[in-house]
Length: 529
Image (cartoon, rainbow, N blue to C red; front, top):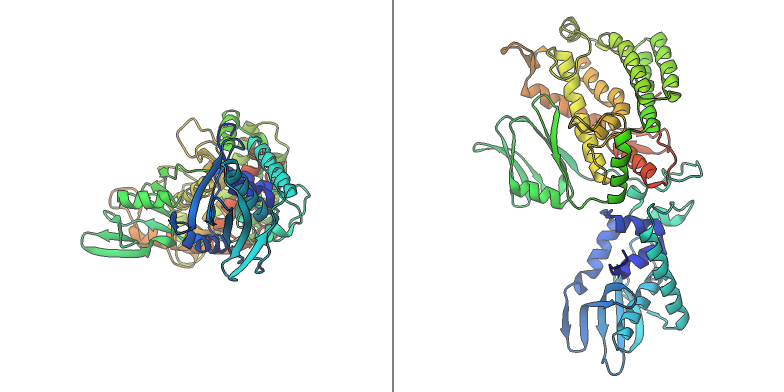
C-alpha cells in the first residue's frame, strides 16, 4: 500500500474498528440495512456537479498525506473560506451525534483542501433522517488526531494478519460486517456471546430439466424450455445457481450473477460437481496465498478435526437408529483421530469408521420403500455407483459440495486447495474437506428422510439403459428435501447461537479463514448429539 493513496473513508473505518478497516481493504463487502440507509443518504449528493456556490461529490486528494476521498458538499467562496458538509444517516444509533470517525473524516477532507491552497472555515455533518445539521469544530488537536489515525490505518493495511476482533464491545452488535468478521467466533477469550448472524436473504436456484435454458428478462431470471416458461425469479432473490446435466445458462445471467458475487456451480446429471464460477472481486487474497502454501503439505490439525467431527456425527446417527454399541465404537475412533500423528493415519481411521457406519446404514431405512433400496445395496460405492441408494447418496453429496463451494468462495478462499483431500487430481479439495462434518447430519439425513417418508421410491428410478438412474422427478424431490434441511436451524455447538445449516457451512469456512489469517488458534467442527 506504500504507493497507493488511502481512501479517507478507510481511515474512518479504522477509527470505528481496526479489524473492519482491514476487512474492507481485503475486499470484504456486505449488504445491510445500515449500508442501504447510508447509500440513500448520499444519493442526492453522489452525482458530481456545481450550482452557484455549491458543489457536490467533490473529488479531493493529497499526495503529501497519501490520501484520497470525496466531499459530499462544498459551499462558499474560495476567497472567503469554504464550508464542507458530510451527509450521514443514523439507522442504528438513531440520534444525530457526530462520532470521532466522522470528525476524523471531515478533518482529513479539510487538510486536503488546505494543502491544495483553499481556506476552510466550517465543517458540518447533516443527518438526513433527522434533517439536522451538527457543526464540527476546527482545531489543531483534531488535526493531530486525524493524522495519528492515518498512521494507524497505514499500519493496519501493511499488516500481514487481520487485527483481532473487539471483545465484549457494543460496536459489534451494530456493525454491518459482523457476519463476515464473526467477532465471537474468532475471539480468543473462549467465550461465545450471541450476536446477530443473519442468513442470506436469497435462494439457491437448482436447474435440472434436460434441455432447458436460464436467461435474463426484465430483471428476472427465467428458466425456459422451448416456448414453455418453467420458472421466473426476481434477480435479487437469487444467491447462486446450481445446474445439472444438459442445462444451458446465458452469458447475460452469468455476467449479472458474477457482478453480484453469486456463485455458479455446474454438476453432472448424477450430481458430481464439474466446475464453478465466482467473481474475480474476491476478498482475502493474502489468506488465499497462505491457503495454497499450506495445501501443498496438508494440515494435520484441520484434517483431524474435520474427520473427528464426521465420525462423531456418524456415531450419533448410529445411536439414534438403535445401534448404540457401534456408535460407541465410532466415538472411540473419533478420539483416536484427535490424537493421530499423520494425515494417512487420519484417513485410515476414517475408513475404519465408514466400514462400521455403512454396514448398518441400510437398516436406517423404514417403510414400504426400504426393501427396494436395501435389496440392491452392494455396500457404499462412490462415483459410478449403479444401485439406487448409492445414487441418492452421491447426488446428495454433490449438492453438499455445491453448497460448500459457494460458502468457501463467499469468504475469498479457493475451493480447490484443500488440507485433507489432495488438490492434485483437479477436484474441489477444500469443499470436500468442509463437507465431511456435514455428510451425516445433512446429506445422509436428507436421503433417509426422503425414502422413509415416501418422497422417493422405485417410481423415481429407471433401469432402461442397464444401470439404475434417478429420474428428473426424483432429482427434484431430493433437491426439495435438501433445501428444507439446509434451511432448518441448529444451535451451533461451539458458538451457542441459532443458525441455519446453510449458514453454518459459511461460518465453518470463515473459521478456516480465521485460522489462516491468525485470529483463531484452532478449527472446531460441528458435531451433533
